[in-house]
Every structure is written in structure tokens, then in C-alpha cells.
Image (cartoon, rainbow, N blue to C red; front, side, top):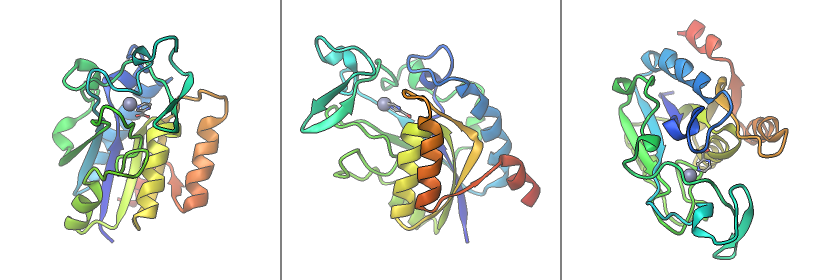
Length: 208
Ligand code: VGL
Ligand code: ZN
């Protein structure tokens, strides 16, 4: 079994003070930094939107962030402008040990389609290349942490399982948006029900 560590969207805009801040989101950074040295292969995803991405509420007259609208016949949550390509908000958290990252996968680059998962866009039309990369590296198990637990982490984990990878979710390495109270708890349950193992980071360090 060859494992990779997969860091989901640990970007400034998802940290306190960012455009789409996740409560306590900066708490995942030390967990990521502590785990990176334990893995031969570390992958990080970046939400990487063009400036007028249609997931932004600002592109929809009369709509505010966190409302839901229809986009190409699908429900779309409208978000504050976030993770615009090349801006500081799209950069990795400044405290993240980026020297430990071996491969970066960017998603959400199509202006019309959102992409919560690091594997596919939300309509499963376009692969990001992450599956091909992991298979090329002979990786069959991913250990996942990052932001946000109930959005991009959840869809990344579900896609990883569907692609045939084993998945371990690091419970203390994730924080959620909780647009509705309980969303994060429900996401953890959904990931576990789909086959993810849920552990604390301490147990990974102890196991070496
Ligand atoms: C995310 C909402 C919009 C995330 C990305 O990384 O969880 N959430 N774009
Ligand atoms: Zn986004």
C-alpha cells in the first residue's frame, strides 16, 4: 500500500480574515505541517477561479452570497468572490510548509462550472488529472485533510473512494463551513458511510 497525503484547499481565503473564511480554519495548518514529513508523496489542491467565476454571487444580479441559484440546470450555491487565480487569497496559507508539497492540482478553473472535488468538476465532466497523477505514482491510498470539511473535502473524499483509492480522513485536520448547523458532522458521516476511515492525526504520527 502506497499512501499520499492530500491537502485540500489550505488557502488564505478559507482562513480567518479571508473572503470565504472557515471558522477555525487556520487550525488545520499545524496538522498539515506535522503530517507532511511522514509521507513520501504530498499533494495539495488549490481552488483556482478566474475573476468572473459563475459561482460568485457578484456575477448574479440580485443575489447575495450563500443563496442558491440555478446554473446550467443545476443548483449552485453562490459564494463570495474567493480564490481568484494569482491573488493572495488563492495562495497557500502563509504558515503552510509549502516546501513539503510534491504536486499541486488546481480546480474550478472553468468559468462556468464549480469544482468542489480535487478530482472532477461538479458535473463530473472534466477530470483535473489527479487520478492519473496518483496512479502514475502507484499510490492506492490517500490521507486527506484541509478545507472545507463539508464542501471540498467531502467531495474530494467521495470521488477518491469512487475512483478506487482507499481513504483516511484526518478528523482534527478539517474544519467546515456549516452553512446549516450540523453540515460538518453530516459530511463526516457521509464520508465514513462511503468507506473512508476517520482517524486523529496523533494516531498517524504514532504509527510512524
Ligand atoms: C470551497 C466553497 C467554494 C472549498 C471552494 O474549498 O471548500 N468551498 N469553493
Ligand atoms: Zn471555490
